[in-house]
Length: 455
Ligand code: GDP
Ligand code: ZN
Image (cartoon, rainbow, N blue to C red):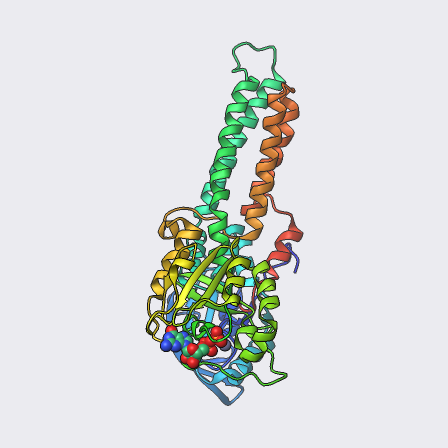
């Protein structure tokens, strides 16, 4: 899609495909009302008030297609800043598709993925960082990740970036004055020292922002988690508790490997991406034979390791091996089966452990708290901080910071300010790519193409 095209009227199904009680077909553009009216029998949509929902029927010629509710929202107070019509259908996916086809035959064009959000951006309703947060919101795996996305949608990150850019611009203007009128004594002379103070200040702002990125990334993408332990200690049971599944999956018929399935567990708002659950779900004989090799591989990829021990039995050589293997990981030792009499001699464990019962779902909150303290130093609840969570944004802030550091080095070496100016300008430019103010067209096109249809 080109950025300079005329804004014709676009249409798409905006609810997830699949069976649902209702689905929404959305139209946006100058002819949205006219096109909707051409297939609708009910009130005259051209005459109804904006932001109303109207009962009626969709017809194809004389044939009734569905009973619907039609929302009418007139520009500019809409998501795209264009006229928007949303047809709430009842008839299931086939009927919804049929209504979409009808609209396309009546003059609408099928929207490309992300095109509604792209229009909101191009019409100045939201900036790029906000548009991306729409996408993050759609993909958010837990309520906390969604909370970050919502905050970005209301522009808190953009606001912060814009402030920093403004300050940088002012410094650049002063450098400019210094370069252009070196002979004027009354013009404030931007000495290297003063500029260094500013760039150090910017550096600190960006460092602070970047420090939130690790937390943001975890909340967004999940913590890669490996559950390891010898056969029968309760790994599958723990996995099922974490996934909150009713029934344990005990069998694994040859050929039905689950290797490609990524499972997420929501632990106090932190998404755990459980790796190698295929291994956990395979029969224990198999785990027995390849357990350690598999554990090694899982350990290498994992951000977090849950090592399960059976408290109702003494430590075995295999337990010791796994304890040794995982000692340098972010590891939580879980003493499982504590509902049974404890046989394991805990004095043999050199690190902290948590007593749980996977079978009875006991004390898993303690695991939650431990994860929180390892990865977030308890600050996961800090709601008001602006968090950097999007990989593209993180990359740009890192590069901007790099440019600033170069500026600082040059200043420290006593290089002329006009050389330093280049680095500072680059920093300003990079930050502008976050909000889209300085983003190239191709980037924008590519970003929006990652959206799902109908958004
Ligand atoms: P895995 O081989 O490590 O995956 O272990 P499983 O989850 O398959 O569990 C092995 C056996 O231990 C099963 O019979 C479970 O019901 C039992 N088990 C698992 N967790 C607990 C627990 O917390 N308490 C008790 N009493 N039994 C458990
Ligand atoms: Zn198992």
